[in-house]
Image 1: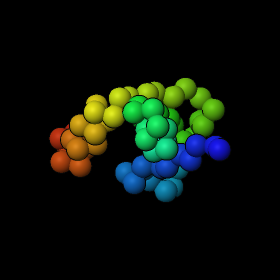
Image 2 (image 1 turned 90 degrees about the vertical axis):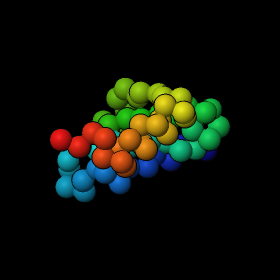
Image 3 (image 1 turned 45 degrees about the vertical axis):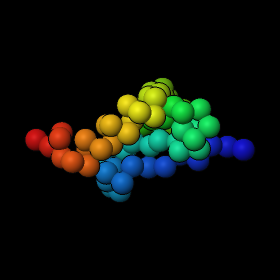
Image 4 (image 1 turned 180 degrees about the vertical axis):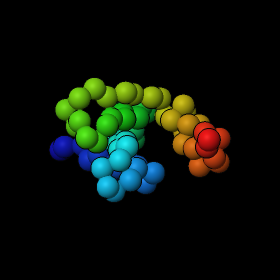
Length: 66
């Protein structure tokens, strides 16, 4: 089975900054692979689920807003 990558809801639909993650891998390996959707065969960053959850929580809270 091929892992399904999901585009971030914060990525724009008009070719802007696009981040994808693979939830099925997160569920099985307890790590979250992340990549640039414009380069699906390029490098992938991997985060443990605790760090990823903390990052997403901070983004949603606006901690990184300018």
